[in-house]
Amino acid sequence: MSDTFDALELTVFSQGVAMLAEEMGSLLERSSISPNIRERRDASCALFDAQGRMVAQAAHIPVHLGAMPEAVAAVRAAGACAGDVFLLNDPAHGGSHLPDLTMVEVIADPGASAGAPRIIGYAAVRAHHADVGGMSPGSMPFGATELFQEGLIVPPVRIEVAGAPQADVLRLVLANVRTPAEREGDLRAQRAACAAGARGWQALQARLGAAALESAVNALLDYTERRIRARLSMLEGASGAAQDVLESDGVDDAPIPIVVAARVENATLHLDLTGTSGAVRGNVNAPPAVARAAAVFVLRVLCDDDVPVNDGVARAVSLVIPDDCVANAKRPSAVAAGNVELSQRLTDVCFAALAHAAASVHAADVIIPAAGQGTMNNVTLGAPGWTFYETLGGGQGASRRGDGPDAVHVGMSNTRNTPIEALERAYPLRVVEYAVRRGSGGTGVHRGGDGVVRRYQAMEACTATLLTERRAVAPPGSEGGKPGAMGRNLLNADVLPAKTRVAMRAGDVLTIETPGGGGWGA
Image (cartoon, rainbow, N blue to C red; front, side, top):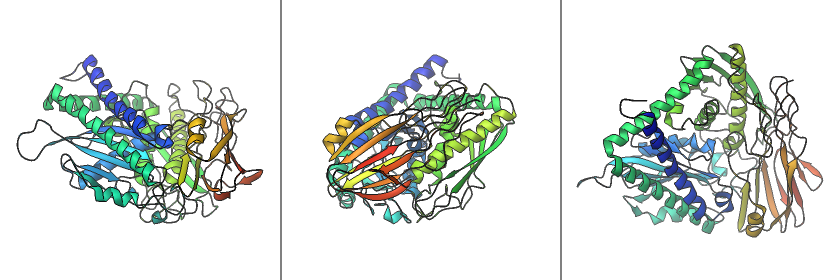
């Protein structure tokens, strides 16, 4: 395995650091206030070494985890000192979209001698907050054309300096949101999770010693890289391309082309987005970190389940993003839906390009699924005093291995659903139906997974904001399999657009029918 660690030692270390990240996530879920984090687990935790390399992550949200290394890089660039704690959401400085507030604790060496403490690592927690201000409740607005309309922008700022809280910064954040008590509770839960990660990392160094810990991290990242490149070697020389569209940006109805060319050379996956649409007026733009997260996720899916997820995966990816690209957002481009919808389409198209590439070298042993539902089905409901946000599962695409599962979050989302009991207790809403949407998966040798039907009844007047996709272009099948059914949104009996904001009166019913996954094989 390496000059220092045998296979057993490295496996024990890998599982140990992964459990530290899982412990962070468990504490966050038990401590948070909002159902979105406590119940849906729309949050992610990871640990980084002193060089800012991701060493371990919990099995949380792919779009968060693939992008968090840039948040840690932004904190390092801001002049981080041991004991500092940073908060950020700025897409230009390590953020993804504004509701995802990221907290990073700079871990100090508890055994350092007198003088400035030494940095030994970073504990990071990213969580989707149900409101961070902006033009509509929930901060996932329909029709936004500027980042400033989507909520409070937080560059990397210190909320603690060498362990001393900076209460003024927290007051500033809470003064700009609609639900300050809930936000404060969730931020305190993030702080507790970061502290747990820092304690675990410090204890690990105390047990192993600084030199042995650094050697173990290097060995783990190198091992992961070798495993990834070994799988890519099965596709050596392969090349392929694919394209699809986002249906609209919420401002203009024109489809938005997403193009990916894939090739494998020297056991490295090269992805090129040349040909993809330039930046658009609406809020489906995304910073480059989101495209990188999609690339890392797709590559990880190709590998065996026991391959760790850390910085070693990203070493085997080369990504080309044009300067003017919907996946290369620059201020003041709006990005709220890019993190959730563009990320899904990038994943779909990367998989399709890889399937084409695998066929070019007859690599039948590489399992690549057909397209899943291809959307997170973002639903935001709110009124003065409360905001509710969730994403909905749908069908997963089938593959050579078998049918796609029904009613699951696919691609860049890995959240749970909001339990009906928790939703109805917290908000003036009733769920009058929640069921599998039978028959919505694409047919084939292996069937695509079915979507879901979820119907919300408003108990008081509120607004509903929808950011959804696959309402006009169905999730495609693979190898001759049929496409999954398109999704559908309704207010009472009236069909709604894929992206919209509507007023609901008490008694109105909002229905979301999510797409099925594509089938595999003729």
